[in-house]
Image (cartoon, rainbow, N blue to C red; front, side, top):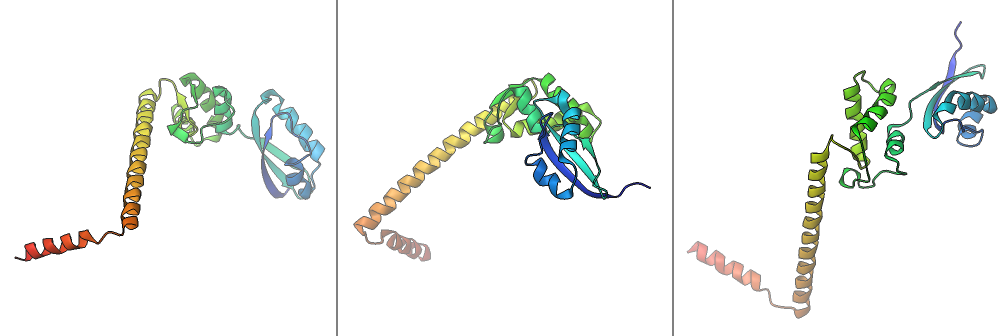
Amino acid sequence: MAKKVEKVIKLQLPAGKATPAPPVGTMLGPVGINLNEFCTKYNDATKDKMGSIVPVEISVYEDRSFDFVLKTPPTPSLLLEVAGIQKGSVKGANDIVATITKDDLRKVAEIKLPDLNTNDIEAAMRIVAGTARNMGIAVKGLNDAELAEQAEEAKEAEAEMAKLDAELEEMEAQAKAMADADMPEVESTEQKDENETSEE
């Protein structure tokens, strides 16, 4: 008879470097499995991927034994790795922080393929390209025109914002000056005159 799964725990750990310290200890300690045994098995299974974050799905059985399945590293960490940067852009697509080649994109898509809901490498590349765009990572030859357009749009949007800010400041200054001078309400008399002429 198959053993009953009590709990499934998902973790993202550095390949070959899992230790019983948190988050491993925090997540797995309460379910009663042998932490050292898990760490040894995980590190053996991931030692060829050192330097990457490798997600793992652990099935804990009622007798406190366990099995685990390794997943592919998260797309953002793979993209950071191929781009050679520490972190993506905080402004997303409007701020390009790195550029990768189409080959780099394909490499990441091939790694991610088993975990994506497609078997088509082109579709996988499009999914990965979307993540790259949101991280501010451009793909050479894939979206050059789009990137130039985005940069232009971002520049125009910033100029527009600056213009609006300047207009707002000017209006506020005028309103303040009018309030300080305590002028009579000229606008309302003009309004009445217009109404009178339109009635005639």
